[in-house]
Length: 207
Image: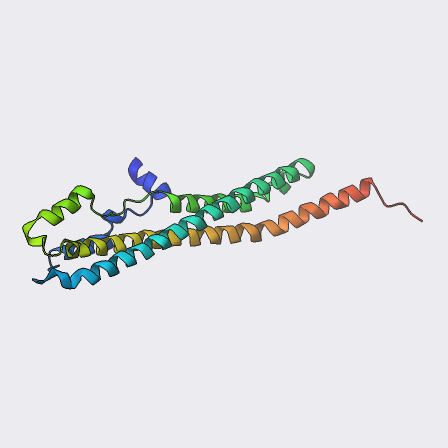
């Protein structure tokens, strides 16, 4: 129960156990090379380039998430200060009007943090695994060709993680928009009331 609760609040996509990735893993048995593995060398190079592009996309999304987290954090701080000023100078109800944008910003921060959390993604075979690929009798002709399917799984897994990250960032952007829109009216009202209050205390001198 606690695990399900944590996943619902803070969980992210576990690529290695997702249904989409599982369907691709099941294709491993049907993946066969012909007698001449050298013909697949270009496929390996293509897969490696495709994986590099997926990693670049993943990294760009991480950079966007870091920038968005800074903006949301600063917005939350300023909105909280504005709400405190409104509550102190005007009334508690005036300060309560800032709760909606504050909550929206907090939800945006939550989505952004989730997009930055580590994911259980597939990875390339380690050095010893690569050594085994070379030494096996049926792979000595073109050992790199036998890594084509592993590169396919890497591309699929990284793409799934990037898609989940993009969805969370899109959600955070929407919460940021809600916060900005809901902040306009209470902020303008607070500034106007403070200005009117200051004008009544210190009226302009008459001619």
